[in-house]
Image (cartoon, rainbow, N blue to C red; front, side):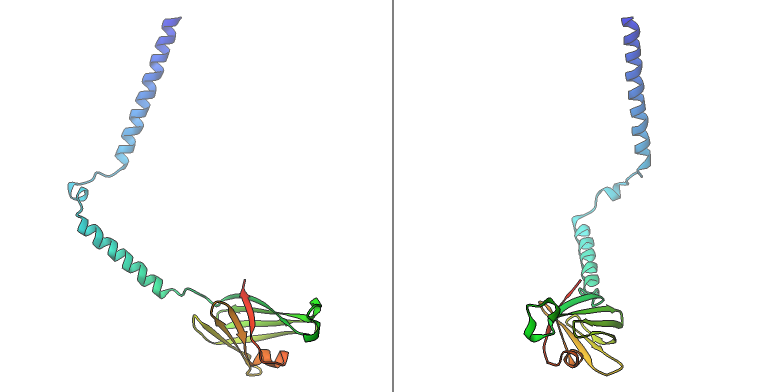
Length: 168
């Protein structure tokens, strides 16, 4: 009985080892042989290739803008000056910009207003929008905050002011 167990154990070990050797040889065949020229690459060639890669990355980073104006913006403003404690005194500014078009919405207790605007010009620091029906405009300036101002807001609210908005 002990002898049969030993024989079985021996056969099991031999079969495991042979399977492992078969798998190892298959793995070795999958990788392509490396020539002697490929094994030795001078450090100078490596650094030149690395510099080329780094310069390509720098060029691609310069051409891609770091800020896009497309998106949704939100802000609030005090619509009823004497009632700042009342939530109804506050209005909401909503702006949805997509390519060369924008939808501007004012939602307050006094009025709900929606305007379709066109993008006049844009740079990484400033976006100019225009209402084609009235010719009035809005400007969003990007510093450490996004500031909205312009003749369109002045005509709605009745005073010349700047409004802080946030991109969502």
